[in-house]
Image (tube, rainbow, N blue to C red):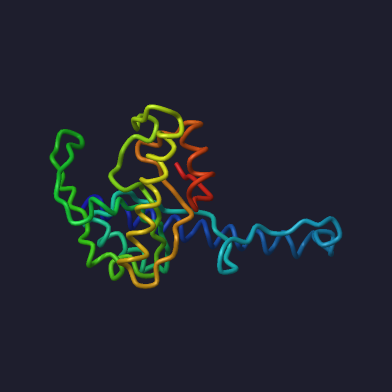
Length: 196
């Protein structure tokens, strides 16, 4: 219940921030623009679908707790990005947080499309390894291992989720990245952005 209440408060704050920010932008533009923004080549920062974004939500691992989050986001018309590990879907586990054991059950592969409908699904690698410590005899071997972790997620999504597209966003496990990892992503995957 504590998590649910905290998320509803956070969601309300995000909605309020979004309304205020858009209102201030509109007011500022009307009061002081007088066409100068077009003359100087300035423009508003428009994200996807023509909407202005002020807050983003991103959640890792594709766990069953996401279902409650999605219900709250859908209630308020908000979107989120869910970063999944395709080889771990449907597996059970647990974590210890603040001295308490918490279930960490991954969403079943067959439920992925239905669960995340209307939200973005991004790569969080195939098996959740630390990308800076993948083994390989050479730098090229390490790059190949990193690219496999990403490309296999895409291949799985394309084969198993109706309407899936190649993912362009990666949230690296443990937020661990290296020059070799960035090179591998740039040279051998469809990833355009790493988020942390």
